[in-house]
Length: 386
Image (cartoon, rainbow, N blue to C red; front, side, top):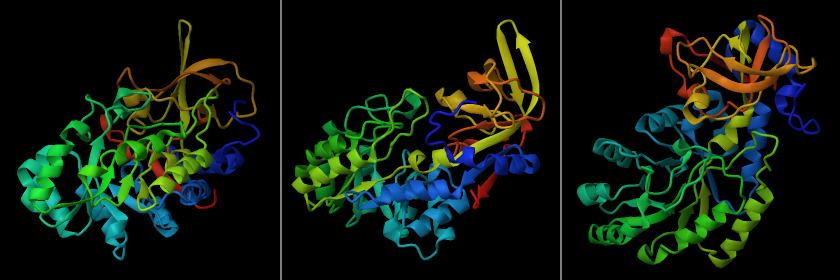
């Protein structure tokens, strides 16, 4: 048996037998824990320094999850107009200031339509203001600032620095200020997001302080959105993000800037740990020194390991109490050499129809799935009982 912290086991360990029953009828499937989602939401909403939490919808747009967060009082950060309309359809009575639209290289019509909906919009390209300033006449907007550095375990999750397509560099902010003043556009918020998987609790204080250096150019700013990227532990040698230190560091900077609100927009932190992917073993194989365990779904259901080289612990849920034999590669049925969900994962002897569990897949799992090879991806199961 292999559990990172046996003193504080993950939720799925407690509900092992319930998950085996779900898998028996529904595999391959994603299973989301309602109690885990609630715990994560409460942990962020309890941070007194944070004035507003927006959930990044792209992480997981499952209706049950969105409804749970809506009931918790969390807002929604949307990166496409389709996400905006999805939220409005689900919650027709939602306050418009609970939706934050943060598009990137979107067509002009999306900004026009979003303005007609009277929702908050973040501008992350000087081009928009240089060419479409008339759209924003006498409107309130946010500016996404690239502070010059990014964070993340893989270049595809880094969202700051010259190689990132996101944000307006600090060197261009004077031009932004000149344009918004000339066209009577009101910048009420500054935003920055550096990347994903950040475990340093002082990171967001640093972002806040860096954004305050831009305030002289935008005197109407009352909100600093310090982004998301709050990380979760995925390996045994990682130290969990301390929310107490995260909160306290922001409490201290708010003492210096009491009139500024702090907003955050987490995605993965809220939902990743709530989700597991269950799939049954189909075949096993040995090639030289490598042992393969094949399961009934692959990168069509869960793309992150191939796209981001992400690590997710994998266990044989059927044989959780049996001794570990040796490392094995967990692979899917997709006709791609990259269809590997986990490499050299310590496993017991695996047999056909054993249920394999992949951990921390509640974010960027089903939302990035496809019908590649015309194989249906894993279905979703919202476990209110877990």
